[in-house]
Length: 201
Image (cartoon, rainbow, N blue to C red; front, side, top):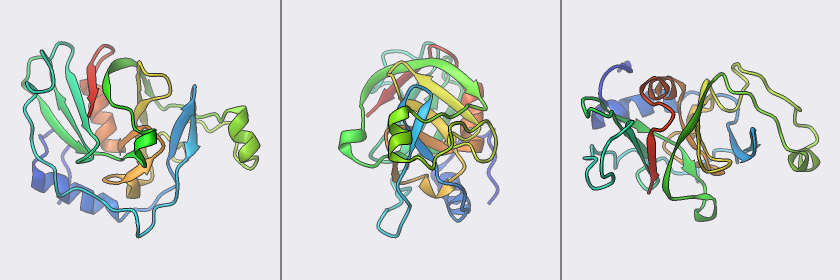
């Protein structure tokens, strides 16, 4: 089943998309640990369980008092991201990667404060000490660990971003950030704005 980024994802569409992209292998994604920096996530193995079976459509009212500037809900349990437009005519549901552990998971209300197409990646000095083989800089492109787009949140070091390693979607596989397929982050990027509400539960 081919994905259509302009349609609302039903449960069947999400499962089909996850299955189609889940078999694709790419370079490891990285999770952010400092300003403009991300740390390599652990390898995906058989002990890392994918969860796409609990996807279901939700209403925005239990989570937001309004949809001013649009609203993004990240459900770390079902590993899904929900988006509602300000006028509530657009609803999207995307599979995501979520943090590996509770210690790495942050929950609560934030908002999008910056949007970047083709984000860059640089390791911190501490990361270079631990991993001297890492490059000092990775520019936009297929080797960039942040995928094609990044939505910066008001929480320092937290992002919603793409990933070239599609094995991670639907799994607990990040060190803090929320990852989407590149085609999905591109669509979400076009739908959101600086000031869009974000709630992680």
